Image 1 (spheres, one colour):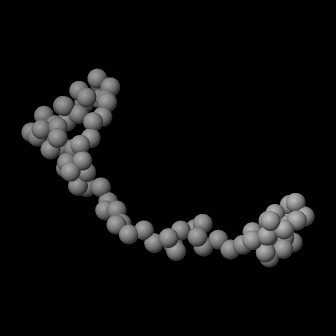
Image 2 (cartoon, helix red, strand yellow):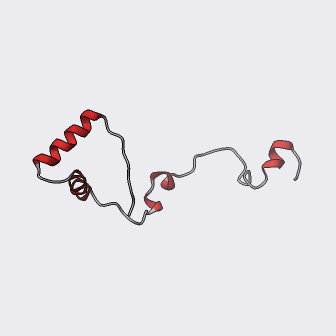
Image 3 (cartoon, one colour):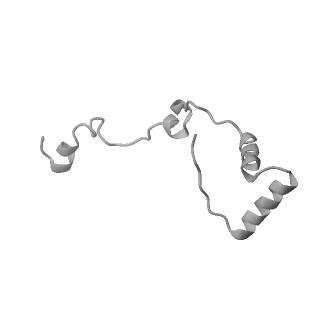
Length: 79
């Protein structure tokens, strides 16, 4: 379980307190109820569905071994 502390404006706290009172619940119970209404989150993220992962390369005149032989192209020498 995780403990969460938040800061609220006094007016927001009064509104929250009033909402809890009107629903005859403690503030904590009211917040738990709100959280249970949130949509479920996926436990496993599928990176193959990420738009960045799906991007294709762009056309370039760069040599195909540029990332391997960078020094050769920058300094004109083998490292």
